Image (cartoon, rainbow, N blue to C red; front, side, top):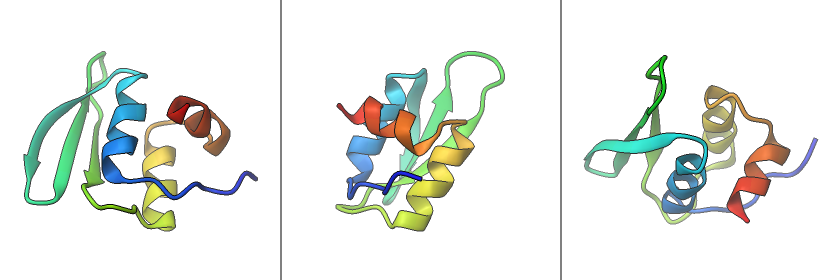
Length: 75
């Protein structure tokens, strides 16, 4: 298993936008992303300077990605 990088919430949003998620709305420090294609899944990403590793792993899992695939999206 690959180790998770330390990334900000904005970088997570940028990486997920590459695979078809767009910003739906934001309330406070939580950004809600919506999948463009059907089914319209929603992900909530905290807009923090560093997303906690457990939270990041959950977001990656909910997006249907592996850690390796997510790291490739960051580059």
